Length: 207
Length: 207
Image 1 (tube, each protein chain N blue to C red):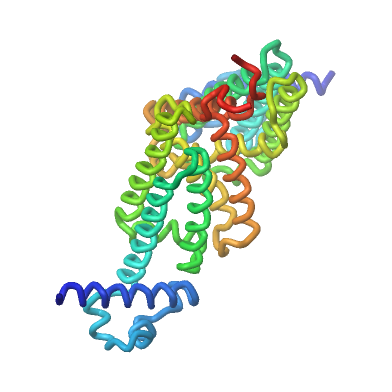
Image 2 (tube, chains in turn blue, red):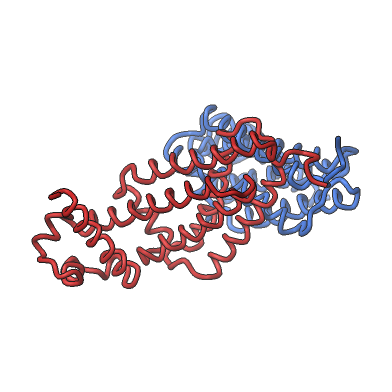
């Protein structure tokens, strides 16, 4: 009972913090404001999250979990493996953009903040790899795809998405991600997925 | 006549410098040694190349030109567009490795030295883009490939190769490129090209 109450409070804090971060950006938000938002004493807030960084980390962690949950739902959908992969990449792009908005940090700053997040991103990367591998395996089983080594291919797909993102990183060095960069990245990733999907499709299946 | 002699001398210097750089690495080579190698006075050498950096830049520029020349030869070969692309990526990998060996610099250092090279790499990138676009256009014409936007697709291909390389860059931060990293990159790029090629192949062409 006590534990439940505690979890509910934590969630309340996370939601309030998420809103503030998304609106004002990481650096402009204070712990005072978040405490006030939910009518909580500052001491109580610090009991749950001893620093703003730890609160921010918890918000990001929560977002990552939500994304993976959403992706697992996609796995169950009644659509082809190719459609699942396409959807996955679109959701991933959208999510990545939200993550950037959340921090109001540039690509580069978020990248440099990585050490703060510890193994958070590694755990996330493993989760992503599992999901993509699963989609490829399923595609093979249903005779939609012809993927020789699903795990290696899933890794390649994720590495390419990561690489395409890293490529434009130096260009946005000290600036926020703007619409132009995002659109460029989006267009490139979707063209890539399109070609990639045709490349792993089982031959002679269509037309 | 005088000009020819001068060009011949310049080539002599470039060849000697290339050998030394490849064997000892950029930082360990002195201008004295290069001058001695070809029995040239130091003053004469400095007349052609006022600094070791400018000589190194000329060597790299020469290598880049040679690679593009070699690639243009590939364009004329009597093989399919898909084979040309595959060959191109293999040659590119090999060449990139030689470039690294030439400087005996880590990935990272070479990347950081980029400002020294000015627009050298940009000119090279444009050359590469032209060649890949040409291969794709030819593949379309011969009904081997089905590429909607050859230039954009050529750009995507090059961006992916670049991105895959950038991805492993942070890992080799202060070390030389080792066999393991190179093999990892090579394997990944070849798997990618394989899938990419199947993705742009004209459908129903093969059994």
